[in-house]
Image (cartoon, rainbow, N blue to C red):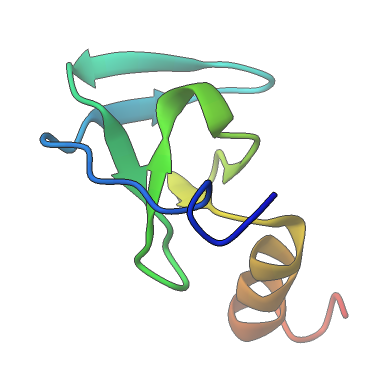
Length: 75
């Protein structure tokens, strides 16, 4: 992947309900924002989220970072 493939200029942020293994779209849109980096994540590229916190993450590393911030005893 080159630096241009990772850029995204979607026009509307979606609202999702995260479940175990899937999510439901509450408000149609092109992307959601990462809870850690705030970068947009295309819905078709969304792989990481937390059901309890209802948060999306751009990468596994960002999901782990958030886990450490919110539950340091688990690390």
